[in-house]
Length: 167
Image (cartoon, rainbow, N blue to C red):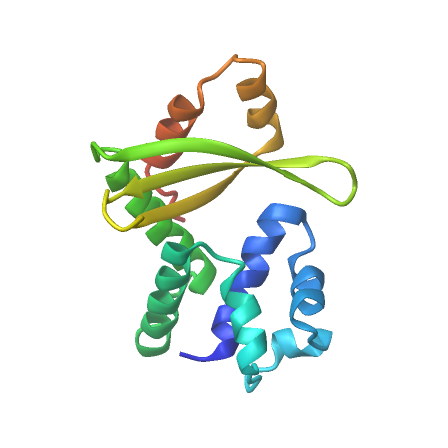
């Protein structure tokens, strides 16, 4: 597993959240913009700690697993597509779990707008063990949810139960 793979995933995640993921990532980690394309970039311990907190605990574990898998068995679609497919596959199985809870979280953006996140949460009931998968809800869907035109769980099931597109 190399730092470049984790940076690629983090930049894609931030792009989904705020638009310009690479710029946000270089600012958050205090990196030169060229570091995102440098195959031999090595993060400091402090940078890796900041990178880790761009993910939920479960997503960080998944990102590391996908990075190792990508290093040993690269896939044509790339690491980001592989990570997103694995995350959606896991979420689909979670939707059938009796201990699943869903919620949405609004995150204020610097431009005054807001981002809505769908969180799927599995609570194991002991010692505060909870796994969380976070999905950014598209703005148009978020407006429908807020206007009660569509239920959050209904959208999640439609979105996550859809078969991945293959090209």
